[in-house]
Image 1: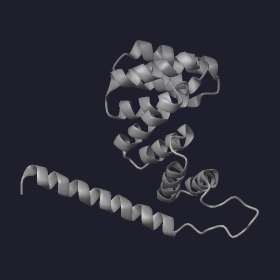
Image 2: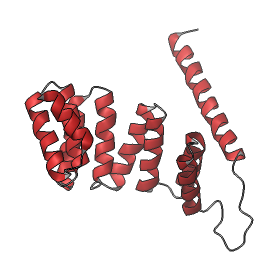
Image 3: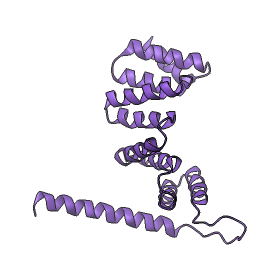
Image 4: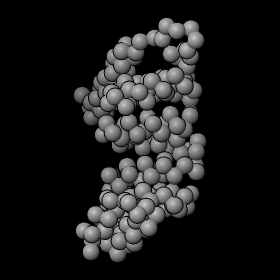
Length: 189
């Protein structure tokens, strides 16, 4: 077998497994029997059930429901964002980034999407890209303490400690009860 054939075989196996997971998750879904409630195939109902599954810790089921909702109402930025978040929680940063970018295409002024993309880039040690998205998030809302905290963490990774201190101080200025920012600032003192 050539290297290309091996790669194609691995890709086919991966996608077959993902289809199997999706089918398994959908089999766990019980249809609603009440005539007064929305259809279980209604995108809003699917998202609500996905949120419930997420809250109960069933990330695979939540993801399957969101995939179904996205198929019914394609390109909803909230659904795409939630899919990205769950994939990131499952450790699949590559797929998470794909959905975050799709969500950002639909909602360019969403500071939380920028923060999440920055988080993935930071995990992948793509610091310049992470910095760009955190700057964009601050440009959208310069009153979000979490963005400054995340920026501080990125700057620590980049070994820009004085700049990181300034970010932690700004986070604390915006939220005086921000325990984590205070702890990180103390580590740098």
